[in-house]
Amino acid sequence: MKTKDFSLNVTGTNAVCPVGETTGRHNIATGAIPVLSCEGACIRGEIARLAANRVAKTPGFARGCHGELFAAPDSQMARWVKQAPQVVVIDGCHLRCHGRIVENLVGPGSLRSFDALSRYRRYGEIFEIDGVPEPERRAVAEDVATWVNEQLRAPACTAGAPSAGCATNPTSPAKESRCGG
Ligand code: SF4
Image (cartoon, rainbow, N blue to C red; front, side, top):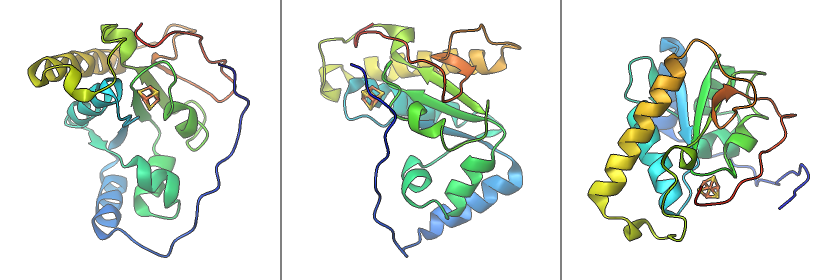
C-alpha cells in the first residue's frame, strides 16, 4: 500500500469538553508527557490502548485524548499535546495511523512513536478483541507497556527504528511490513 500525504476536512464546533479543558490545563501546569494510542477497533488497537493506559500511570506521564487533539484544536487538551516537549504514541501496528497524524501536529523531534505489534508479533489472523481471552490480552498489553517504558528510559535511539520509540519526523519513510508481524 502506498499513500501520498493527504488532508481530512473536519467540521468545526463551538462545543467544549469541560473535563478535557480542566485536564489539559492541569497537565500543562504539571508538565506531564502526553501518552496517546491508535485506539484501533481490532485486537491490535485494543492492546495498544491498554498499554497506553498503563504507560500513562508512570509518574510524569498522563493520558492524552486523540479526539480533542485532532478535532478540537483550540482546546486545552490539544494545546497541552502540541506544546509538550515529548509526546508518546503507541500504535497498534506498523500502519502507525495515529503516529502519522500526530507527527504533523507536534514539535519536530518530539514524537516517540511505538508499534506495539512489533513487540509481541501474534494474532495476525484475528480482528475481534474477544478473539484473545481478556487475561491474555491484558498480559500482552502489560508487556508492551513495560517495553515502552524501557525504551523511554533508554538514553539514545538507534537510527532507523521509528517503531521502537525513536523521535520521528514527517519526512521519515514508512517501513513496509505486514499485519501480524
Ligand atoms: S495502527 Fe494498526 S491497529 Fe491502529 S488503527 Fe491503524 S491499522 Fe488499526
